[in-house]
Image (cartoon, rainbow, N blue to C red; front, side, top):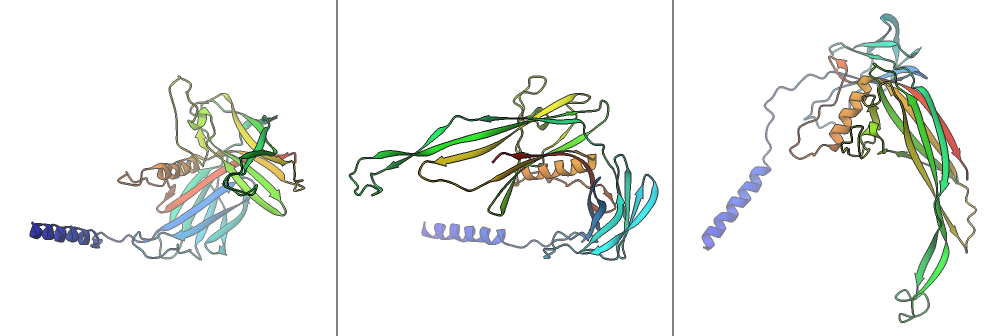
Length: 333
């Protein structure tokens, strides 16, 4: 019996050793390709970042930037300009794109196959308006237990006493974002809600996500009454599939908490701002963000690989476009 146990232990150690054996890569190492990344907006000049792809078995932890590349910009089929090398793989032009522009980048560099990419500037959201309201929650008392176990009143056998120290409540700001969708045209959107709080010269920024609305798939029932539920989507992207040709309203709520203590006067001032940005985005940018979302929510163990979307022919990367409709609200102190 002891011999059998000893043999079993040897087999177990052998299996562990086998698991740590490095398996050599017998495939063909692919040549590096140009990677083009750019997010084009209507309120700024066109800029692109050009790097080189990296083999997946490489030990490098950075991407090689590509210098002295030729980055030619075409607008609506006509040559516009060559973007200028700014260093660190950044290339910048002087042209500011307009809604409806068809944009193309032809990129070439010594030692790489030439690549190209195209995108179209979307039109701003039409019928964009925001209505806001504010409500105050019921006041709740802040109560602290003192006495037993804490030595607060002097001994462990003292009875528990409760002190009312203050009150707490919240201001709930509700924003109804309304916009119109054009019928028969595939449109894609991204909603960004940013909350900024400033005090004592320091600023904190937070972003809201997981909105409860049919366009995000988070409403309990869809238009046909079927149950729908999706995981958290920090990109907040959606298409017009469910609202084609309709006027739609998305409701966003922002909560500001207040704690008022009776024995302490808080002279701290807080500046709160809420920025709501409803973007029209290109289909390519939408598919790229959608592929990132699919990768993040995928089960990493034995799952199907998620291919990150690219619209760069001959290379990698994403060239997307967006137009902004933005409003900022300064909240009372």
